[in-house]
Length: 147
Image 1 (cartoon, rainbow, N blue to C red):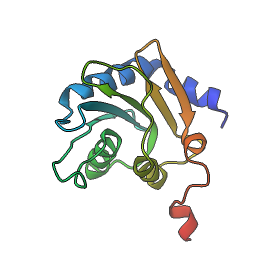
Image 2 (image 1 turned 180 degrees about the vertical axis):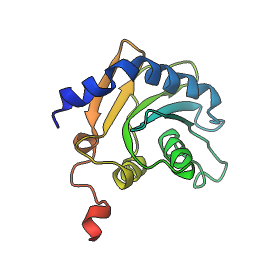
Image 3 (image 1 turned 120 degrees about the vertical axis):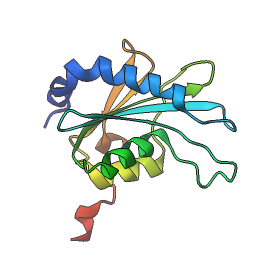
Image 4 (image 1 turned 60 degrees about the vertical axis):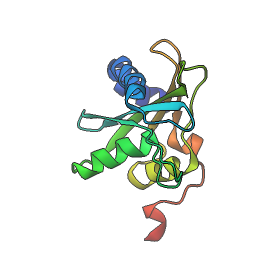
């Protein structure tokens, strides 16, 4: 499906999703990087799952906001998704668009159709960029490659 049509399908939910992602930054646990990230994941059934980054002194056990949202959703039995909004920046506020890391992109590829899942990078309700997962993660490895 064309990206414009995908955006139209969630357009009425976009302000709510962006506000949720920005609000989720308040729950971030980022004492080391001081970089707070929030995410709002929209399931195809309309439910929204929030996530924030959670750091750890050992670094490896840290978790990104995007994966937190996905893991919350999957742990509650939801595995069909339409879009995710990501908002991140230093504690003082959002300065630039915050793209998902490679590990988060791989998790998205596990549960989402790359050509129809939208990844929205937001600074505010008025300022955001929209990508499909396939634009951000071309030639991804997914469950479809195993069978």
